[in-house]
Length: 168
Image 1 (cartoon, rainbow, N blue to C red):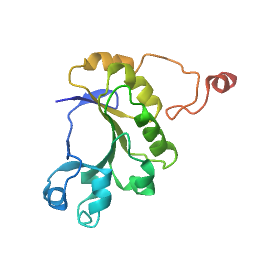
Image 2 (cartoon, one colour):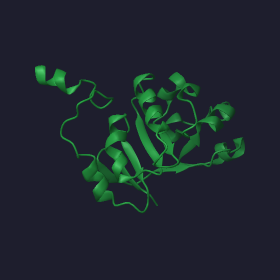
Image 3 (spheres, helix red, strand yellow):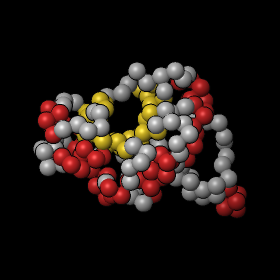
Image 4 (cartoon, rainbow, N blue to C red):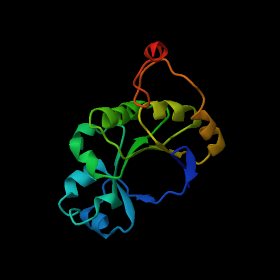
């Protein structure tokens, strides 16, 4: 089981991720908090209408477009972005678009091949939860979240660049 870092602390994961391509029966019969691929949710949204949206989360693969969910993202308590390989940086852009363009305020979680070296930069893009790969040390990831006390560029976590902060 992957280590979940949320709000800069290790926490238990309450969500079950359903495989991409789940049919309507699998989606409606699932119990507890479920994480559904965005394509499956779009295809079966009518059959999921009776479920509490606080019990449904959406996950994106790196080749999915956040525009598919758009303003509907506000309906969900959790949005996750899959990083299929540490070399695939498209998830950073998805996270940033969800936070900045669609103003998503809920939990934004990085899943998949999430490594210690990435968590600080994922946080800068708006991620606030990280399902760290199983073979990685959670203590090192917690330290990595605090690796830098100041950043030069503006980003989701602090939109004001350093030169503007210094003038204040």
